[in-house]
Length: 197
Image (cartoon, rainbow, N blue to C red):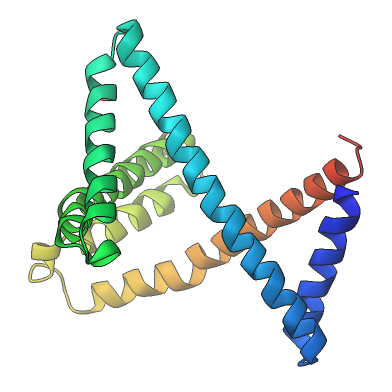
């Protein structure tokens, strides 16, 4: 039954992308409304799971229980600010948390990811190997041109080279990886729906 529902929903959404039939548009609007309700339920379930896991760590006195206590406290403050403040999601407290906690945290993680990928790429393609020098040179150029205060040090053509590197070869590789991942997920999903894992 789940396989039939998922497949028919997929087909209906694909038809809705290419036609303006009122019945199809109404059905897809209803599907999107149900998905929003399911998404809200998933967020609530995730918050309850987060609280249960971290409260359990604090109660058991696990090794990293202070970190769990910080997670619980910050989550409680953000949820309270969103629910109590009349501005709701436009609350200044939520804006502050996003601007000064989440955004810098994401930037830090992306920076760590860039250095991790550069180190992994260097280990995989050592300079002695064929093509390794090109990988290291491209990574160094991209990393150096992303430094805010270093623009005055580089020739004007270097940022254009970086943009070309990101737009052409890197994006081509990324599209291939994303297409392969999407096809693998699609095949796994179909096999799961029909019970052939």
